[in-house]
Length: 192
Image (cartoon, rainbow, N blue to C red; front, side, top):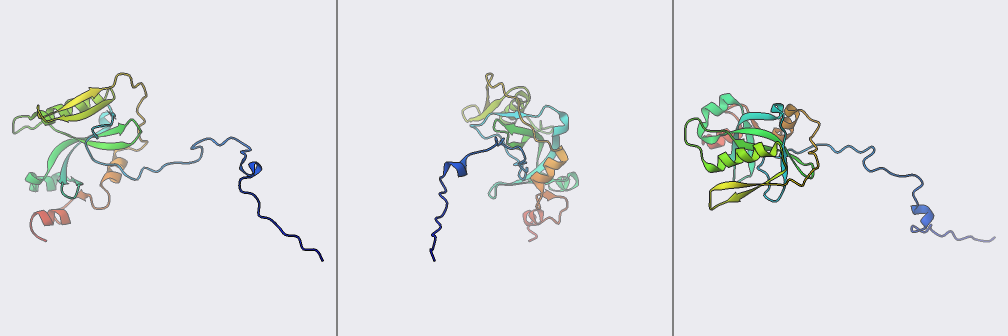
């Protein structure tokens, strides 16, 4: 009886690696939008702001700077903790690479003088509705510098989600403060 030894197939055999039909990138793959950061634009990135008013929301935010966490606060609770919240115009924005984020653009104060940081942030966001912009800090003028990139012709790629869906992604997992019983508020009030 003769024994035949089988050899393993060569993994580098061109016949095993050859494409028999073209594979189109992303033809059946859908990337889920799982994170929507609430942040200012990063200083080295060009961004656009969605011009549709449906993608803007005046809102109260509470920031825990040491923990780098931002919470949405419902108006009734914000009225009860005014020194802890900032009032912003939350605007859907996107980077050149197609990464969406919600930019908290400071609202114009009604009870005090305007500062140049807030004024120039609003100017940057308004310009970003029309052009790709990069926003950098200018410590000598206590303001933001706005750099417009007129040669970027690519249109922004906006997420296919509604503002409500984007807010849910951004503020899920306990990041919506809807009562004074929220653990963050309880901690700020010294109750826990």
